[in-house]
Image (cartoon, rainbow, N blue to C red; front, side):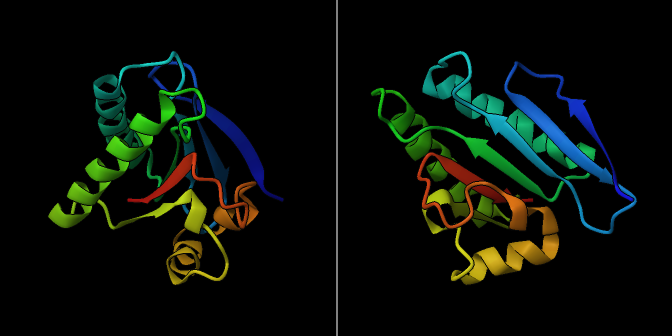
Amino acid sequence: MVRRFLISSWSNAGSIAVCDMGRKTSPLREVNLEAGKPFVDQAIKRLTLEIQHSRKLGCTVLKIIHGYGSSGTGGRIRTESRKYLTKLKTKGEIQDYIQGENFSIFEEATRQAFIRCDDLRQDRDLDRHNNGVTFIIL
């Protein structure tokens, strides 16, 4: 039997870690960068802190919700977050990231992420081509 519990993050509302005790897979964590309608620079600072915090929790995948721009603001958070993640990947600070629109069983990066975090197989955005989320492989 798998016991599940929630760990509430230290940061603003919208971030929850789901950890499975007694399993070999590492936890998946989800953070809503749009919560509170932050400016882009605030969202990037929060992303930096959430990546650090996720590592401390032992997570291997951090799912960020940044929106896709339907309100006129989420799009900038998405594009700047992904630019920032590209820099982190180049520096070797993260292993990879998967854009929500590419989060599919037909993508090699997604299949590799399943190996690191089996919980991703159950994620509601799998094969939904949701460009409002990004999965960060830590």
